Image (cartoon, rainbow, N blue to C red):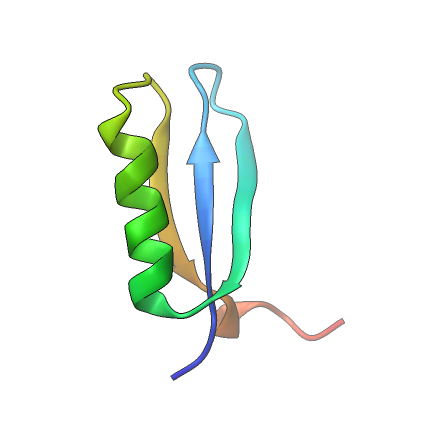
Length: 54
């Protein structure tokens, strides 16, 4: 298991954190909801377990 985050990339290639600390199913639901709005931005889900330790 683990936690997941939703990321967004805008038209200029800038990446932003949309949400974090979510279960995978919830993260996918959030990303799908934003994608369905028809914006030009791209949304995706990433595992937070791959983050390097501080």
